[in-house]
Image (cartoon, rainbow, N blue to C red; front, side, top):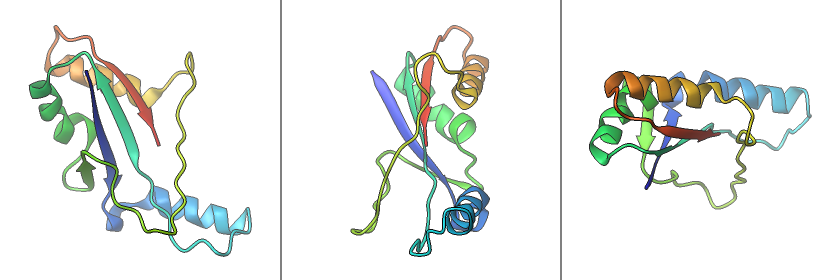
Length: 117
């Protein structure tokens, strides 16, 4: 079974989205852009639900600065949504780091984690 969690920074800590929004406005000239949110998705296979729940606030997010959601957060009606993920065979450092952290919590597990933004 695949467990999924969506993680985004709280607005006051969301430097990544502010920088990307600024780049889109200045470099690409997208003046109609009103706001931008960056949400990271983690798909986790090969671990039980109990371990997954332990990993959400420790491996996949930092509760002080992140919000973790089980479903894609609600978007405005006029929003445009697109995703970016690594192709098979490409190295995904975020996924690799998460896999190593899960193994530290429970050595007997062999998780398979895929991420997207």
